[in-house]
Amino acid sequence: MSPPLQRPNITHPVLDRECGPIKVLLIGDSIVTAYAETVAERLADIATVYRPRTNCRHTIYGRKWLLRWLNDTHWDLIHFNFGLHDLAYRNPELDTETQLDKINGKQIVPVAGYAENLEVLIRRLGEATDRLTWATTTIVPENEPGRFVSDCAAYHEAALEVVNRHGLPVNDLRSLSQQFDEDMFVAPGDVHYTEEGYRRLGEQVATFIRGKLT
Image: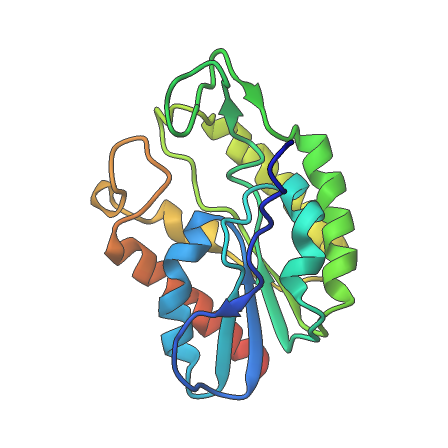
């Protein structure tokens, strides 16, 4: 008999203490997970910041689990992003943790499917908040093993076409990450950041959200 499907845990507050009454939800991948605490700390006087207890990965995964992450709640603001996982290439034959392989791997969600999925996600998210906001995807550095720099640009343009059509406010984290020096990344060719990099991303997110709430 197959084991039961392991569902992601429901959404939870980022900080384990009392914060402001406004409810803010962050949705995204490991980049969001890493800067969420900075956002929550910077907004604690006015808002309680929540996020799913899981890496939200790509748009297919988002469509599957979104209603669970929304948790039957009407959110004062939702700040979301998908992209880095969608454009990644993975090779299931690789005996590595990430299975990243842009030479022999298969792309998780091609750009046309990515745009279609964003359309669906935006409609569903819009039913759960009056303030839906989009964060642009942070950059793919040169020599990243599972992603092409050119794909990052193409997915960025595809996302902007969709979110602009829906009139969503855009938090430009892509431009911020383009300004980062090499020492802000955890390693050459890695899409992840040092503690300082995540702090700077989180501060911009907090400033952006505060501006939409006050």
